[in-house]
Image (cartoon, rainbow, N blue to C red; front, side):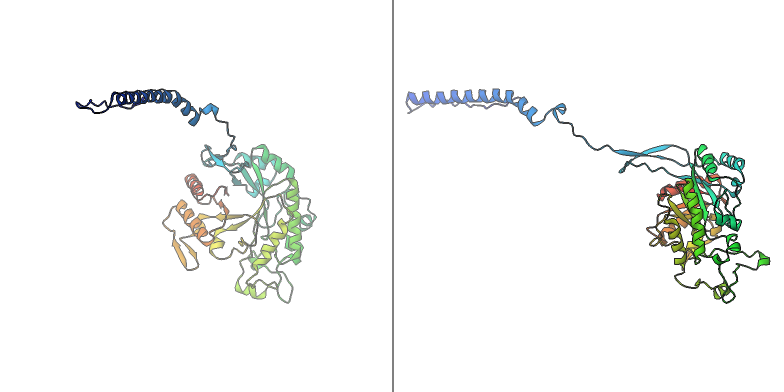
Length: 398
């Protein structure tokens, strides 16, 4: 920086001076001294300025390197096109997005049928990385080669493929195997073990959901201790085989008519009857600390007030909510609130159902289970994008 210096204004000597000559000499000395000080100040600043600049602004290489914690990133794969997005994560554990496809019971006829079913899983519009296998299906059939003595006695053992072979076949195709076990929609087991069914007051005879000649069926009762024994035996067998994820379905009461409620022995008319199902589920999963159990509930049952198992304050397992869009009808009715969805597209109906569900249960975390019934590939892709919009990480398709 160039110094401006100090300008010294030289005054003219007065024509008439009364001061002696010595005083003039002193003034001259003072002027010379000031000039010398200015020179020293200028030279000193020129030399010291760079030094001060270095001291006040050290070079980058002189700054000690500060080590900061590494930012861990999570790679999320888009379900529709396979593209990846890397986002920061606060934890080092990477959580992979699960996009699961449900197999039909027919896929478990034999190992060849299973292989064919796995090869037939659609590659678009979604990229599936897991499959859901109906090991115990609605109706009560056990669809694998079970060793359960209770199942064998009840003749519910309908499958021929060992669990180990099912696991190996699924994993060899690059999919994560997820087990599905239906809980109470079982009309096989109660035929042999009558104490696990609903019974009629007084007679003790078993209750059917309709006249037998009209296809009436038995149901497993959550009030019966034998029901818990049977479900625990099947569930433990599946868990021991190596399935790290088990989804329970059919945690429901039968569609009782008023006449049924009046004749059934068990307290099905009680306002807190839901505790029979929630307690049963809690007991069954208590022995599965590492199996990541979950329970499925229908969004239609939720809107109709029939989702007895949907008690987040009691049930500690995750909830999977089934959406069968065509069955939603023309309107979504929740209490006195009616939402007209007749003219909406399938995606818009899906949005309306999610929105209504979140208004009912603002803090509920759930995984959507979307039925392909009535949906096109374009609908599936749009519903997938809608899940991302609502921060629903996983998507299951059946």
